[in-house]
Image 1 (cartoon, rainbow, N blue to C red):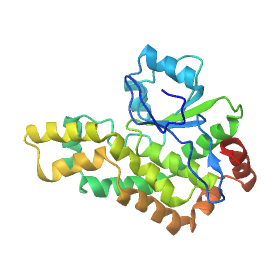
Image 2: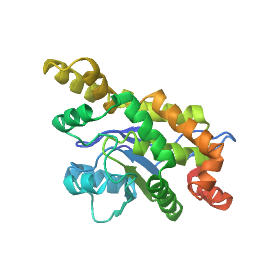
Image 3: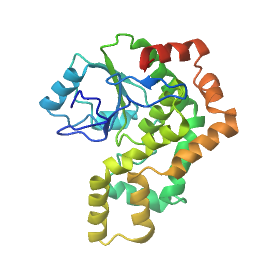
Image 4: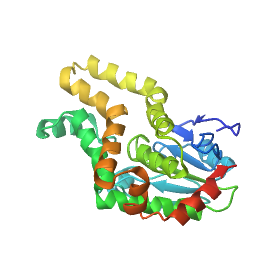
Length: 266
């Protein structure tokens, strides 16, 4: 992991590690580097990776995964990092942690295709009480990360859906325009491209095609359609993102100002 204001951070055994620094807000401020990091799973980190987290200043690890995902693949982090488990869902609705066999069985039982299922999951991340509670506590941790030298990391399994919405809410609270927030969200596809292509090629070689292949792609990627579904749910239920942050996530104007003081450079 580099310290040179770099968006994508490379790890030996981790993927989709990204610094949320450098984004511009509507009023011309910039998100600070090395303060908030979004990532995929931390279950396979090498000793070298763990040292890289320490060197980068990471002090807090927020885990959005379900109890089952955590039990199966616990985070491998140094004991100097404070761990907090905030499950967005009681089980992994995003399917990121499911094996191919589990996915096959699930898809046979499920009436929706992969894309429509994910659209539903994104709406639930906005409206479900457990998801709202997890993101509310996530902001509590962000507000508690007051030492300017300390970084906070948050993740799920793939680092794209539950993590993607966490990043969306955080950047939105700071006043980053939605267009830029969406670009950060969609960046997952570029970063995970080799992984996604590898999985799809493997599936094709196994004779998987049609709707099953489309579902694997839907499950491994992020989509404008998913993001837009979440934003539409926010507008429908709350009227706007600021009202969602205020009502659903119970962020006061004072707390939003505190967040800006902590995470923006003037």
